[in-house]
Length: 228
Length: 228
DNA sequence: TCCTATACTTTGAGTACTCAAAGTATATAT
DNA sequence: ATATATACTTTGAGTACTCAAAGTATAGGA
Image (tube, rainbow over all chains, first blue to last red; front, side):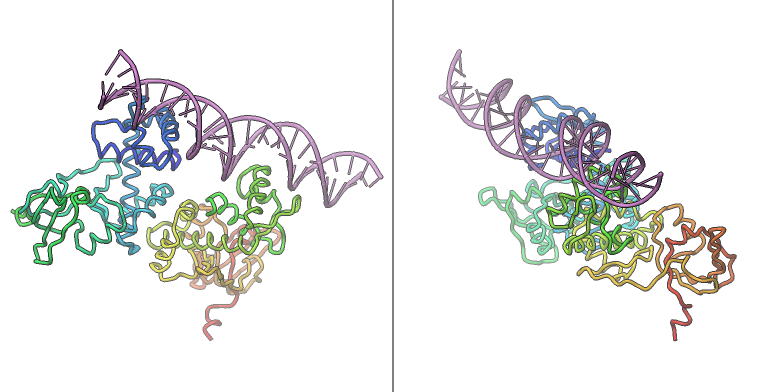
């Protein structure tokens, strides 16, 4: 039985690997993501290696083993199902779900997760559009790009919002920039560092920084095109 | 912020005080209830006293302070609301709810509890008939007696089942001996050590031991009488 | 009154984390 | 080739628990 601290480290390493695939995760990034000192991260990583959850190369970094990936996907599944449950059933706003899910995911049983999965009708994604791994650990990755990688004129549909900042999520909801919404890219200005989008229904256009737009993942192609 | 270990000790002391009111809880009972060695209980109790949660008299025992009672009632409220939620929403059997609730109660936020309370329609009791303390810590105690304290011929309604053994709870459900059910006491035999009850609808009577019958709390008076 | 069983406390040590601070390796710039 | 910044590791110590085992107080029986 892994402790909840171990679960949290493994999940964090998974998220760091996701952000930069095919690279080892260095101690600096891990310790910052876990909000601990580098020495603590080193000590923990040695322990994780002795448990067979990661492969650790001193002064290089760490990668998850197959077993580590399995545990990570279990935790991601728990986290995302709990987030979905909090939003859909207990009326949390999508900006509020993260912290509570972070604490609950280490306390729930497999039975609890199975039951909320069934209660929610086996959802494919959480409120942020993140895919929910299945019980056997498989995860479907959709073909998405960051909003800032689109070209002016593109019609795109918002698929995921990976930024967890509650204030940002609140703003996004106000502007209806949530998974499922279709928008047209009006302008991307490297000079101003901004991205402007407009809505198909003709509402006032909205501008955000390129930095934050990297956290908005979209599917290319208008909804109409896909229907063909 | 109390740790979940502290929360668990306080809740356990509360339950022991409930079982024998107006007495201090000795270390032996506490250490057994917590499944730790007596030395561990002594050390912890000193810590709880230094936090102002209990009053501790060496070699006598421990009593909750007002602050300790407040924390205990918070934990009892959480536990019972979670149990109710697991049974009513996630389709757990009442014999299964305890263990999951025991782990979740230390991980949930106040907001989570508020939302569950509202979602369930502010229930007064949990699946075992135990009263759920309100958010301000008040608890309504109904006037109940143990089944073995009744007299043959009494018509009683089951109010609480304080035995947590899953096998026992499963049997009780099979026999419809759950909170709300009205039964007539047929016979109490001190010699045989048994209590026999029959159902008002004429189903076959059921016999259980006096020892287990002490965990079944009932209200005296037939439902008809109460309607007057 | 003394004796003994029992309950209780104390002590020393171990686990699973954490940090601060000192020491070491490495990439890069000069 | 050497210096330096940075990343990283090691060490020593602290917190919050836990147990085993040794020592102490107390109630009740002889």
